[in-house]
Image (cartoon, rainbow, N blue to C red):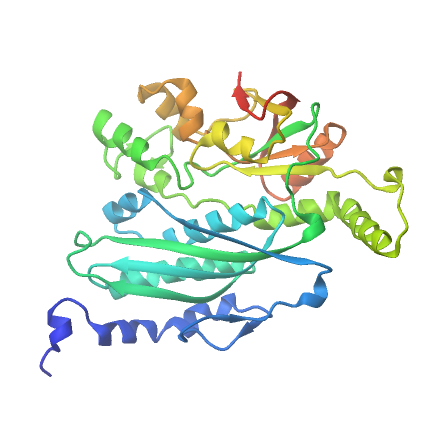
Length: 372
């Protein structure tokens, strides 16, 4: 059959349709209650069960993977990129107390490679299933001449829901509260432009370079999946904030009835604020949840720093202060909690297979995070 004119120009619609024909099977594991219709329509449909909430608030976020993609290109390995993107987005709404409902993806490339496409989508599906998040749609764009051969870009949008009275806004944070750090798996999805410069230019390494400190190749280390903390956060809130949430609901009901509940009757909120440690590190992310009258002091050396960051610190030639602003340095999420419950939160987090440490405290200040 003669090649179609558009395909000859670089956009093969028929190939795209054949590749997408496998999507229903790949996405079956992500289906959850609320999903309507099927993938492939002009828009994804999701029916929110409003009966579960007194006052449901939708929470959304959008992100990409950044130059971590360069590592995937170099290793011709694309099965983890989709997981990175979903997990990053899940974490961004988890810090507000939201659970994910559905996810949509975008993939742009010069020439569609069926094997690469399937690997990426399989990663999306795996992470969505693990996070109980439906993958209800997406867009694949073939743009010849726009990307380098063999390269692509991905982005994703997530929508979740939280009870309005359960939104974590940091307003209850006070001096004396404790800061808990939850371990990352490595660089996650930030700092790769600097990391690539350090490893591949300054140190003259390759993705295939084997480093004894890492117990494997540099490429495998740099492609470690960005951890999701979504299900851990939901478990923490259910365990430690349920009483405060229930009291908040009752207080709202009392207000509507014209009566008033005594503040002494309200259980304290234990989990007061969460920060996803991504681009901007500790310095820029933690202040996003702090009230104006509080600072956070992070104690360097109070957690186990992964070898990848020890190498960057020793060989990178980067001022230490900047390291903690660019990289997560081994802490993927911080939780600001009531000090008298810090040990209980630590124990609970570790029991859910996440390493965690007490890494700092809240003091009086002006809304800044400092490392000492």
